[in-house]
Length: 251
Image (cartoon, rainbow, N blue to C red; front, side, top):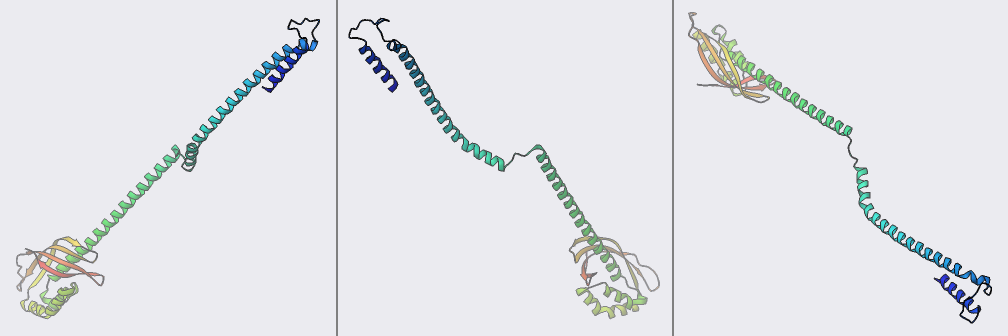
């Protein structure tokens, strides 16, 4: 704008010096410098217009860039957070997923195998204990219900050895009486166990059902009909050995 004002003033002053008459100025009378002024003024005005247009375009571009920068800054925050979490929590690859699945399957298989081994061990241990209690009941009942008249004292002593607790105390208290009656009666009894079944048990005790048969021989060597017995016996561990602690007859 300052350049345009200066050009206007210069043009007016030159026109005033050309003459007082408003009439046209010919080429012969005019100053050569003043004849080139209109062309220079037009070019200057065009240049000024172009400069203003470029300035307006620059201002508009600067405003657009500022707006884009502000919009980009607003969008950068969630993007940065997302990128931050993405870097901390990387997306698993197909290979890593496959390896993880394989590890889970192997762990599950090992757990199942371990459980089966433990279950098998527990079952085998239970069966072993049941067999021990059943054998102790079989041997104890056969010894307790058998009595040889010719060796009565030895027979009574064997019954005491296979018992424990209150049953043992009872046999010890009546051992002499039982042995004397067997010798006087001259009756021999031999018991055999037909079947056993463990009803319940712990590590150191059990309740066992027993089916037994007794064969009796009279003094004249004649035999009586066999008698079958159904018994419920308690087995307890005494000093590492399984022995009879109780005997009941079952109807």
